Length: 352
Image (cartoon, rainbow, N blue to C red; front, side, top):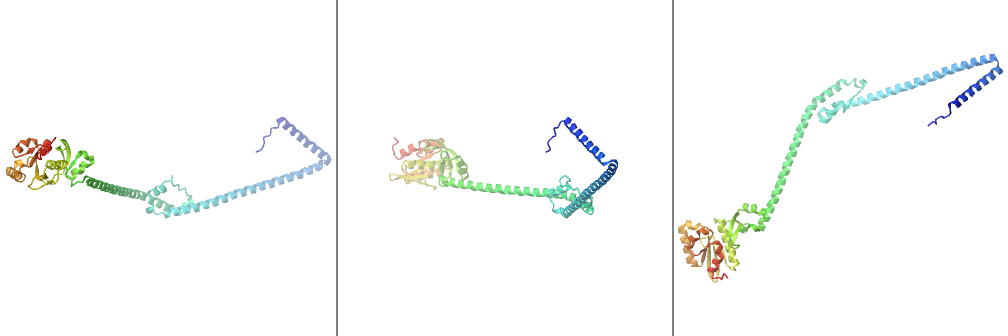
């Protein structure tokens, strides 16, 4: 970087005057020593050489200027030739494109001047203008067809995806059902379904309710002869008996077992519902819900059978206390809330 000249203007002017005066003194001395004619001759020679030098300098500058512009023209021409070659190759590649194999996006790019500017030189397009126009026309005609195909493919993909999702949901549903079935089977085994006629609601989980109903159990509110209060139970009716009948047979058996009575037998025939042995004698318990009263002949046969086989060692448990008086006319009968008391009385077991 050149340093700035800070010399005052007065000093510059003084130096200039000194130089001019010195040059003047030198010329004056030269003229006095050489003479006038010699000076004229010398000046002519100097002038000649000055003109010759100027001509040479102008010639040299002219040659340099010509050479530089000639080089520029040659370079421009070479660059143009190279550009024509590149553009020709691009045009060849463009014309080779098969519009039927181009995607929608590719066609849009090729047709959009902003996305794919085609500023070719006239010399490049000279032989291919018609082919280029035909190719562009083919692309414009192909575009809506390709867009329609894309829409169809998109719908097919969506349809396939929906089908896969449905299949997946079905599989998940199947797996879920399989798990639920396994859980149900496991719970059934734990509940011992099919072998237990009565299940107490208080001992069950909420998810067991529907499982029991599916298995054929009936939800009932019954008075328990064991707990001496009304409770909710699930009962699986035995044979053609009602849920109430099945429940009372179940609880009576449990009551007898709690009284340490063994050899208890359940009957589904014309015999009593329950028979058991106590003190070397056989006893019978009949559960009645009111159906026997509607069949007079069958009622008399049943009572005659009990009296013959068990004499006075039998007891009717009446589920409906409103029918208790009618059953007492037939023999020893008891309501639910006094079953334990009357059993012990029949067996002559102390109730104290």
